[in-house]
Each structure stands twice: as structure tokens, then as C-alpha cells.
Image (cartoon, rainbow, N blue to C red):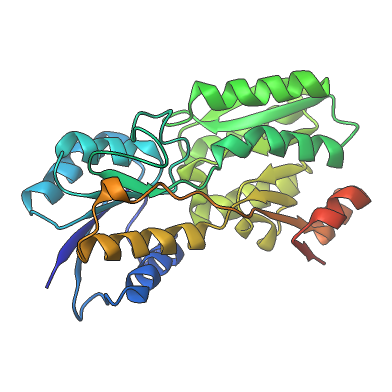
Length: 303
């Protein structure tokens, strides 16, 4: 029975990351591998502590797993890559893998690394555009990032988009769930009218999502997110690719590698469609009128 490793910055399932693990298993199943029947998975969870990743990756290498799947941005991939140059590595939820130095190119990744790039960070400027259209009165918009893994490129892209839109951008940084509460106290003090939440793996957990949605409602702050799960839970608007689909595709790649495919021959996949989801009930509660241009483009409207 083949054994694969699953290295994540998140917390153990069952828990807030259970849905993405289920999607990953579905991808494996699509290629004929079912955990507990003809496949074993060694899970390693860093529980939000990035400094634990190198040791967890080294442990998987010591166990000689057939493939290492990584979840949670570039840092788990880098930890696995530093630990082995021979065991295939498949990343999921990692944007800009070329810029992060993880692969040589999307078409020909080279080496032992390939995966699924959701293009979440590349869409950050677009999210500011959408939020500015939705809240035209906003003169000051905040960008909320996680200090541990957010790249300066993301901040630079959003700053340029804000400059083009003629709005002032404020950067708010958090590194724990407790700091998120404090971050939502800042908008009133800084005269912030709207909030762009970065596409950071830390913000993907259901507990963090529910915290964001509750705080945005309590403080009446219009916010745009990267994943549809946010407006589905009561958030205002989201724009990005599907998380479950990204993880399912990664599971398929792992299955193909187990059957003999080489990572260097599997191009990095990027989504071809992006979901624009709007929660009209939340917009009404915030006193916002959603422009027809946004409604016409929305893939899903929640009423």
C-alpha cells in the first residue's frame, strides 16, 4: 500500500480544514486511490506555527513517503523542497509559484515540485477595484494581511490599484486570531470605509471566517474576500477560484504521480474560471446598493 504525506499549516481534521481534506481525498478517489483501502496518508499539521514546518517535512521524508502534498501557501512547499530533492511534491493553494522560487515555470516546473496555483494573490488588485465600485464613497480602504506569509508584492499590487482608483490604502497586519479583533477596531480610528481581506491560508479556516463575518457585521465594515465560503456565511462579497476544486485537482495530481507520472512533466495548473459571489442581504444591512454591473457579472447572488 503506497503512503503519501500531507503537510499543512492548518490544524488537524476533523476541524476547520476538514472540507479541503475531503476535496483532496475526492481527487485521489478520482484516480482510484481510497484512503484506508489502497492508500495511507500521513498527516502533519503545523497548527499555524510556521517554524514547525521544517521538522514536520523532515519527518515525512524520514518515513520515505511516496509523495508529499502541501497546503497553506508557499512556506510548506519550501519546507518540503528544502527537505528533499527526490520525493515528488504537489502543492495546493500556492499562488505565484514562479515568483516564490518554487518552480522554474508553470509549463515546465522542473525538479520534483508541481501543483495547483489558485491565483489568489494575483487577484488582490481586482478585489480592490470591485470593492471600490461597490462602495464608491470610500476614500480610505484597508488591506488586511497576515504578517507571517504575506508577500510585499501583494501589498505593492494593491497599493498601485488604490493609486489608480484615487483612494488611500491603509495596511493592517495580524498574526493570530486574537489580533483580528483588534484589527477591526482600527477602521473607525483610521476613517476606513471598506476592507480588502488578503488571500492568506490563515484566513481560510472556518473559525477565522466566522470571526471575520461577525466582526464585519458588528462594525458595519464592507469587506471583500477571496473565497465564496465567506459570503455564504454572511460576508458581503468574494472573488476568486474554488478552494475545494483546487484541492481536488491536487489529489488527482498525486494519484497520477503514484501511477508513474513525473512532477517535472505535469505543468502547474491554474484556474480558468473565477467566482464572483455577492450577498444581497448583507449589502442591504450595510446600506449598500449593489451596482448592476456587479450583479450582471456575479456567478452567485445570495438573497
